[in-house]
Image 1: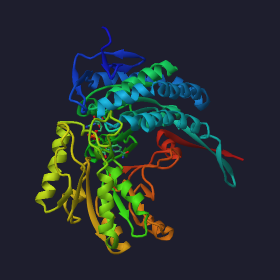
Image 2: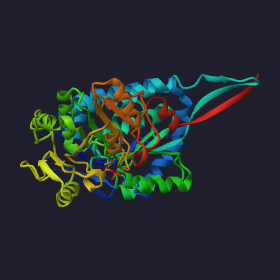
Image 3: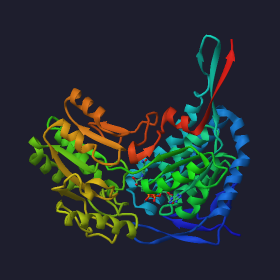
Length: 482
Ligand code: NAD
């Protein structure tokens, strides 16, 4: 059967699965619609138990050969893989923007280059894994990072290629083989990733991509008995379902989940920089897990700071994400738009007051105005639940203790942002916030060597640098008598 190809943004993309080094078509398909303009992009293969079974079997078969190469043998292949991503960065960026509505300029300059870095960084790091030993009186303990086996990798639509390579990079570098289940709302760049890996010489079966709906393809993957690791990025609700499957088979699971992160602004901060950074939370229509959506401002500067944020937010142009002036693109689907609008309507009914925004933007069906709610009591739904849209809340505090109490007053603990000109104060507050990452006087800076993950409902475990390998490897101690 001929391969099914969609042309998106001038790029040919296969809409079939990628299993055991070849394209596998499917009679069942799902529609992939662009949030940018509502255009129909592709009919994508809808996999289920059978395709997942084929992919896991292919990954299992390829595992011994890939593992036997060792980090040095895998390095040149993974470097070529990264180079392939770089060489096709403009195409990947254009396809990603049409598929999920993310800003084209951001994809070109940051997101797609980061996908390539994810592959090369972890390939390099893997060279340093073995060789560590611990001397004790009777024995020497040699610590070895054995590949774990077949890793199931499941990712969401808001940054599919970047989030998938963040898992593929360390999983492959550690010597595992992988089965990727891309997000059904933005499945295309992961398909291109398979072509690029293949062209780079990644052997058949080492990287497999099964397209499909989460409840079907994803569910079959996490319940497959021959999977050794489950790495999931997505919502907390889905993680609870996947966690049950992982628990049944005692499969180690890493989960990077949602957030409702605080953004604390102290009176002694650089208020212009803080205001610009608050407004930046509207980027990509707020569909950013790390967004600091609960703004908390020291009472003494509240009015002046609000004026600065209002000015900065007025430059957050809503529009087509391909336009270089756009800062706020579309929400991903009608279903998600209705979800965001529902949060906003309930917040109004709860007595929260929109200082700006609060409605559909005057651009297209899926575009929502940047919105700021004041008069938000900490227990309101709008202050507690992740909206995943361009919606911020505004609260004030009069003491650092109160700021920390407000900040820690949700079930989440993904990230926090803190602006203060006083290092001692900032360090103390940063240590008191419950969050996997705290940014002080900055936002969204992520070193691949640093730990990343969430506390509480925001996740299980940490990835990044050595932490990724702690997850993707079976760590062995070889204890040799002296
Ligand atoms: P989601 O949980 O609905 O879906 C994520 C992935 O899981 C998709 O590929 C989906 O097909 C799959 N899936 C759904 N049900 C499944 C099941 N029963 N079994 C197996 N797989 C299943 O999340 P979403 O709406 O795509 O993404 C938005 C969420 O992701 C937000 O909560 C956001 O904060 C979070 N997120 C977190 C991070 C992070 O690094 N912490 C990064 C990006 C997004």
